[in-house]
Length: 244
Image 1 (spheres, rainbow, N blue to C red):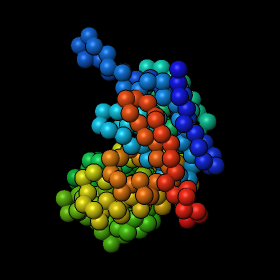
Image 2: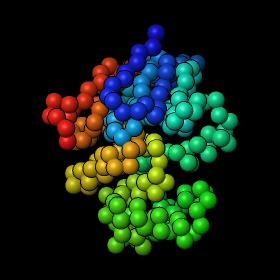
Image 3: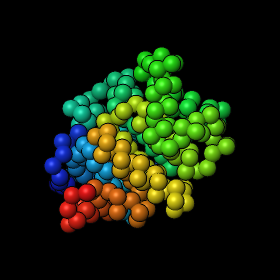
């Protein structure tokens, strides 16, 4: 039997239904997700928390189209994600999703502005258009003065802000962040959390963040708690504080 967690007043832009996933080691199948269902809303930063090994990152991979579920469905922006062929799925991710990872995923030979421009070329922007859009995104994350630096010349916080700018430049409707602050010190981690929350609010994106970082909770619009491949709790930390 699946469970569903749904709350809030925003539009549902991402929906998982009865998701199951196991991983095989030798002859043993280990269940990771167990009939999990949820809705994710536009304009919100949704945090998925829980102990290591509970299935948080697997859930993110299934909902973002990076990993196919054993059973269940994912509906993203009105598309049945796992009904798409590989080419259509790749195109959907390119056009509508952004990713921010713990390891930054930057290319050592490229400057900050070139990192941000990279996916825009695949979307059909000219080089001049891509550069203009990349510079706007870097300015939004406070790095316009550092746009010519390569990763080796940046701090960890700057690298993560470049990766956020790279996602932001595409103006995605869905943004997925997997442990985006775990490699950062307190000040840089706080800055990244603020940026993700602002992206949800000002750009109307649905931001789904997996994190162990307790600082994220204070900025999340919604916190989903997982254990053993199931969603156990759905809370809104700011609900009792009134409008922000």
